[in-house]
Amino acid sequence: MSDDRPPPRERIDPPETDSRRPALIGLLVVAVLVVAAYYLVTALREEGKFEDCVASGRTNCAPLDIPRKD
Image (cartoon, rainbow, N blue to C red; front, top):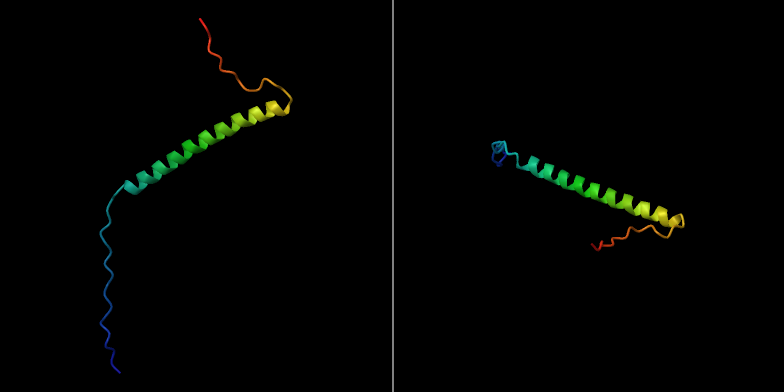
């Protein structure tokens, strides 16, 4: 019995490049997530303050934005 298969080829890896694009994209994604998390935490904190005020029975919890007449 002879083996009619060709010999296995050596795997040639492509040359490595020193591209920083993936690192910059990752940094941008992390920065966007941090900003979104900060906005979400701030909004939830304000909503919690409002709910605490309403739960304590007060009626003047929402700040009124009344323009001043000069």
